[in-house]
Length: 523
Image 1: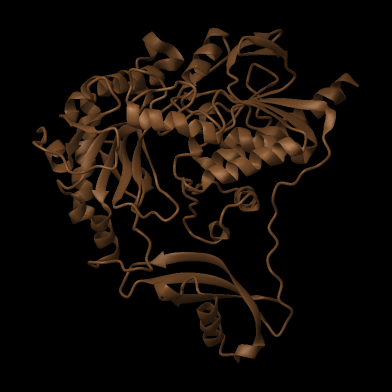
Image 2: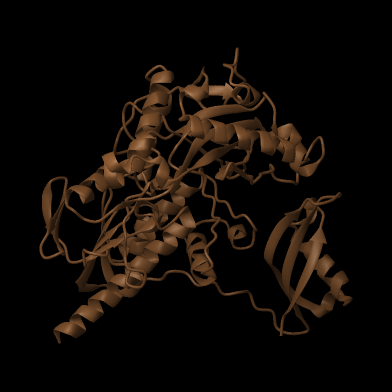
């Protein structure tokens, strides 16, 4: 039986197979020829004390045949032409729902409002360079969804480890590096994600699925609490089962559901700024050294604080990253962050967001869309303060805490530009005060973090969906519409690439259970 060994290695040796073997031999007190094979199953950095080391958990084979681990991934089966599921959205939830349908022998028919990856890049360039927003092709909408151009961090709090491993293994199958299977904080990088997504698309098409781009859901027809047809680009299409995986920014879909009296509800979310430091500052804080050297990755951080009973926390931290314009409509400014695979940009950025509770929303006036309206008002104000362009209001960190407009601003990775502003004029007072309290607290936890070399960019508002589409916990069906399966971030049941992918697969499986149950009832 193989054994599990835990070893510590210098950063320069953590990915060196020969050094790993040497450490295992030493740990087990065996001869080198007795070790028939080994492989890493977990790798993380231990920066608690000097010298900084990597911690590795290694599966070891001694005097027995060595076998590499086998990794499950989604595989194709012959499609039953009489079984089809329509999927709206081709982000992580919709994409993995389609892959799971292929594995289950069901034909996925996908409609994505945006463009394919390569075509989508032109619209992102226009957004970044010319401040032109295409409402159907941007950082949130298009092939791969928001995940394509938002870093590729693969963290999740999901306890469904089997599903998590299936997602990671499937990503490796389509071109992701194998290190995501072992690293404690797996990451692909925005530069590598497009090819992986293209490979997934081709797999779905080659195995009987249909994918339609530039295809927007424009209406729904219901009969007896059942969707009988969908309208895509105003063309009617009969529909038996519908997986709705439109993402957290598809506000027109929320409005359509509400108009059709399909139950939706407001949910808590978070909103704030994206804070950017020189990466060297974060490295020095976390590694407690002047220079991290060539073998330690750019450092990250995770911060959380309660301020007068309200949470403020870091979100989607991007070491060596870039801040990007993520508006999905005209007359709004929204920011997010991403990192390339090497994380080699000179800045570290992170969302720094404040908890927004249901009691903060005007539900009496706006009903279940109250959170959407809350976001809109702040995004519009940011657009005005940025000069009615994609420039963002910005303020040095200490200046914000002291409530004074910065005389000048440090350099930023945000290409459209930053306008010196007092961000207290952007946010409701309770958001600004909570954010100030959080930043002061973080400055006590990480003293060098509290610096005017850090720049706040407003507004980070799309941390999660402000709407939940209620569904049954077991069947994943909408509570009132029998053949509607709300999925992923837009439905309020996921928070990132991995959890959205897991949810998409579960919804695909649920369509089979519901169809089988319905068929049994008819028989």
